[in-house]
Length: 199
Image 1 (cartoon, rainbow, N blue to C red):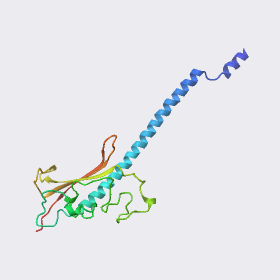
Image 2 (cartoon, rainbow, N blue to C red; image 1 turned 45 degrees about the horizontal axis):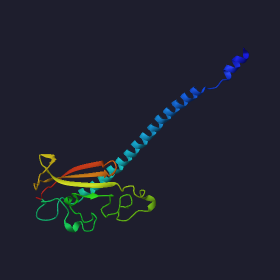
Image 3 (cartoon, rainbow, N blue to C red; image 1 turned 90 degrees about the vertical axis):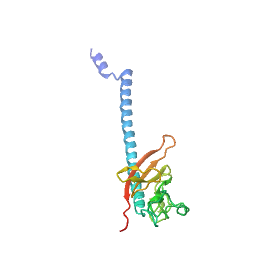
Image 4 (cartoon, one colour; image 1 turned 45 degrees about the vertical axis):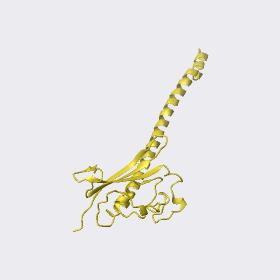
């Protein structure tokens, strides 16, 4: 009898018990890894959106710092676009009024002097390589700008055709271009500016 009791106590797991324990561990591990992967993806998305929001604000400040219209007799340009000489350099340095930015599509994004973002030092030169973003980080990012005259009674409605008003809407978008899954907008800023005639 004592031998039988000792034999029962010394017994280990059966093969079925070991397989069940292994299956439970695998399911729990998979759930844990899925949670970690989801958390990393969310963190990456938040980081991209934060960078894009800052990039959009920087471009909006650049646009808002330009004049309302080209100097001349009339502030109401028939078409909102840069003049031929202003785009010759391939940079935004010659953009001197808001309508010059209409239709801007820049990929990868650059500063006004044409230096890629993440490598610029804010003064038209490149920063030290140790302080640059990793090469190719912004290759799929694009800056987009649209400028429209808007209805004075409803700033959400663009004017049709060649109609003009004293109000222009500036919309800045930072877009991530993914050839496999399509483009997605990371950040959008919209501002309405007004023309106030000199008295």
